Length: 396
Image (cartoon, rainbow, N blue to C red; front, side, top):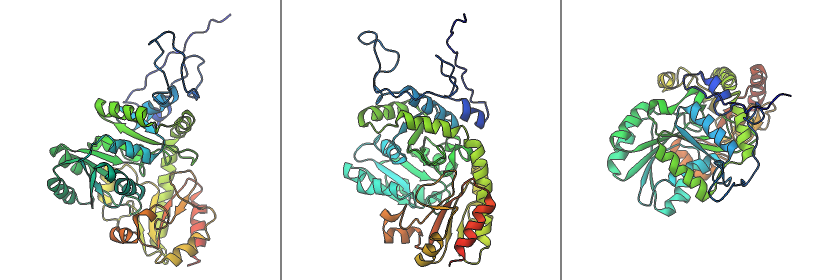
């Protein structure tokens, strides 16, 4: 009879390639059985041997083995020390802001995903935080804001921005912010850690909506904050415990499953994205295309320095709400809906979807028109995506 022996975990190495880390970091065989996949520990509580003696787990709001594995994995992919996962991307951003106190100030990009300024201006402002929004594509705007607001504690960035695909110089802004003893948080959802790792450019924390490219299959909500310092991780773990906006074990499993194919998915997303952007840039019914991979993008050179690929997020101008609606009614391969980053091509209308809460005047100020359409190019056969877009644009 064979004696069962516990499976020894093989620790991952930061020197390993990205795809190797995505598949193996935090995803070591399960010790008791050797299961290749991380189990879903669907337990709310854990038996203790005696008072104060347990195996590292007491209650799943505080910690859970499946969640621990995911947090190890995502920290490894972004190059952080630790990560903390939450019930959604917005819950992750809220947790970061909750690390501050009344009277603190945040400098933020002026054309973020619409849900972020909604949280800032309609919720967190009531708790004493203040916000200044600037065009972060010019580092001098950030510098002026930091000089004016001496109580600034955080600079919050998106690069590329949603949906205008504007970039900010991560290294320049982080160096400037650190001179003022201000931390920098970057929402890296659009690029994923495969194409961009802000910590390598000096960022202090990175957030993602794991719902998007990290999960990749449009079947689970989630968010993450990747940390670079122990005190950040400790504060966020305390917020997980106190506020309870945690990620369920099942959704942790879905993301662990998704990131295993992140590298190959992002390569196909990028390949298809470049072809779709090129097609749209030459179409007579498309007035403008917003994609950093196009040579005429004003920050194309910065994109080449800062990102290892251009991704699959594209915005383009159809000219009017009527034109956008005519086109969007005709798509068949592309799915009209909110969200992004799934294997399927998702197409949306920012003015009535992601940025409806910004208001008409707010959208006008940052350049989001009623005719703008955003597309998250999936990994279908690109010829089918192009044919679908061609058919839909013919309706304009």
